[in-house]
Length: 128
Image (tube, rainbow, N blue to C red; front, side):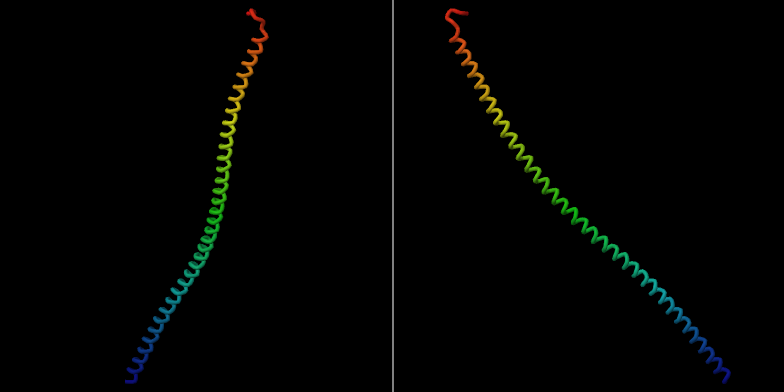
């Protein structure tokens, strides 16, 4: 009977040892999974930090482009106003030149008329 109890105790000890080994293997596998996930979490943290840095840089570049666009728009508006002013000035000068040319033509006609009268008066009667 003692031998039977001894074999039963050995069998129980072997089952416990096997169960402990299986539990230890499960713990090791779980630790390996946790380590892998922790490593991946760290990688994702680095990727997230890089993405955030790129987003900040992109926002900064976008602000620079927006500022440049506003400055260019202001310069374009200013240049457009200058061109409109020059166009109006040029038109006013053209009108003034047309009026001056009209007065010159009138003065030329009057001069020709006066010259003709002077010549006519200076011509003796009966001359051709």
